[in-house]
Image (cartoon, rainbow, N blue to C red; front, side, top):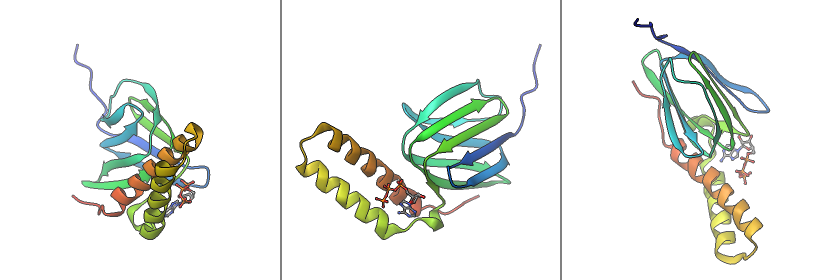
Length: 141
Ligand code: ATP
């Protein structure tokens, strides 16, 4: 028997401060802990940790981009829910702040010996790199 797959899914992205996205979309890509996940309607359910990176989603023929920091995502056949510590659209990103955050993290990684401090700096560097990458993105058909 051939089952009809749903053609759209409900995509929500929330942070502790705000609902950033709640839209019906045809595709979502999220930065999972083990790599980017491309999700289409009807995807098998899964739960994953996020690493800082770029989320993209396509709705009404346009692909949109967002930076996310750490968090979690739940994927269901007709729903994707992303819970992120922070998320920004390209136009919300303050480039000089992200460049400064990258510079600071790289400086710490050059100097500090403690593994805990290095780990914190590595995460800060990932967040900064994600913001710098997404800042240059424009929504596109
Ligand atoms: P910074 O050291 O510059 O604060 P961070 O990676 O430690 O960077 P987060 O803790 O991830 O910052 O985010 C704190 C808040 O600041 C969030 O609301 C996030 O959206 C916002 N934010 C962080 N960096 C930027 C940026 N470059 N442009 C716009 N908003 C930012």
